[in-house]
Structure formats: C-alpha cells, structure tokens
Length: 317
Image 1 (cartoon, rainbow, N blue to C red):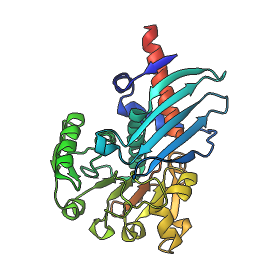
Image 2 (image 1 turned 120 degrees about the horizontal axis):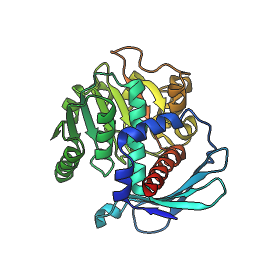
Image 3 (image 1 turned 90 degrees about the vertical axis):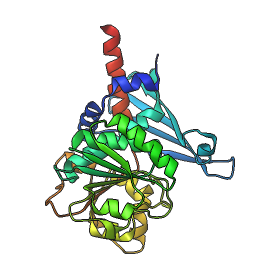
C-alpha cells in the first residue's frame, strides 16, 4: 500500500495538471453517496467529522475522512485535517494520502476550473478574503488559469494577513502580493474576489463589486454560514460546484433562497453543466459571476487517482 505525505503529493500534483484533471472529471459519471456529517463532543468550539465517498461505475473509488475542529487554531493546528483512502476496482485499499493537502489543492483546482468559464480572460487582480491555510492555494489556482499580476490579501488579524502574504509570495512569485486594510477599496478594484473563511455572517458586500468581477466563495460549508451578502448574490449570475451539495449545504445560496432574495432557477448550473456545455459561462465583460463551492468527493477521487497514478509511474521508472 502506498502512503503519500504532503511533501510527496506536492511533487506529484502540479496545479495545472490538477485543473485539467478536475475539468475532465466533471465530464464523467460517478457514484457519489451523500456525505455523512457527525457532530462531535469536545471543547466549546464546534467539532465535526465528515465521511466523503466517491466511486467509479467500475468499482474503484476513494473515501475521505475529514475532521473540522474549530478550536484547533488556538493550539496552532489546522482547523481541517483529513486522510484519503483509495480503493482499486477489486475493492482493495491501495493508497492512503494526506487528505489535508489534497483538499486544499483540489478546492483551488475546482475554483480554477470555474474561473476558466466565469472569470474574464484578462483578469489580473485577485483579492483574497481570508487568511487560513487554504488561501495560498486559492491564489496559486487562480494564477494558474488567469494572468494574475496583483494579489491583495485581507484578514481581520494583521499578523495572519502578513503571514498569508509571505505564503502566497512563495507560491506565486511573479505576482505583487500585498496586505490591505480596506476590503471595500480592494474589492472595488478586483477582477476576481475569492472568499475562503469560516465566517457565519457576510464579509463581502455586493455594493463593492464592479462590473465584470468573478466572485469565488469556497469557505462556508453549511446552511448557517455566509460569506457574501444578499446584494452580491442578487447582482450576480450564480453557479455552484454541484447542485446536490449547494442545495443541501451552501448557506450563501440557501439563505437568500429561503427569504426570496433569489429564486432557485437563478442558479444557472454547476461545474458539470459548464464543462459539458449545457449552460453558458461568462457572456460579457460587464456581468458579475459568482461560483459557490462546498466541495465534492468527485474532486477528492479524481485528484487522488491522478496522484496515485503518477506515484506508481515514477516508481516504475
């Protein structure tokens, strides 16, 4: 059995290959059972455990085991930690992967797939709202598919924003990366706005958005979490990673729907619809587009299979 840690995975899965891999994955059929969410006892902060399976029609598959411990930051640990077990078409467990890193990589890659259809081709200024471990990978992903020259980082804590700036610079050395104090001013000049936070209330105001902006929401993952306000949702053309996931878990979509701010039909499609050409992506340079992602085991399986295949090929050489 292969056991692949974070350092190995980074070498095996360059972002450009992951983006192409996920784009191809959303053109295929998969068996994706509903993920199981368990609320765990513990400290004062919320703790959750997720089980996320996905399988090919032929039987091969992967299961991600993921913990979300809200109090980990106080101990200097990642909030999200995971492992992915990969199975062959005979049902044998063939690999265990560092699921924490795979989750960051595939989340960024999925947004990059969306950006190829929804962001303007000349998008050069990325605003990152959020300073968690995911933020640098979102910068890397968007810079892989669009000519990003400037990256503005905003966070509530100055020291975290400074650390994120350094991490982004290491991953995207050709861009100018700065911390900003005013999210409103930064967003007003942005081509792409990426929110990667666990905020329960909106941090992005729709009135800040200029025409032509692509909004990428990847942080919230439950019906009680919001990153963008009603005005942002109302102004944008809306897309999601999967219909099933969004209409079960995406607070940025479910809350406005429940209050009549938007109608369900205004969610025009998901990643499969975009890559298969069933819906139209960006139609003009002036429209605002919004992509809401809650994550799907399809992405975990496709990324894990790519990584394992590459590891086996290198081992044979």
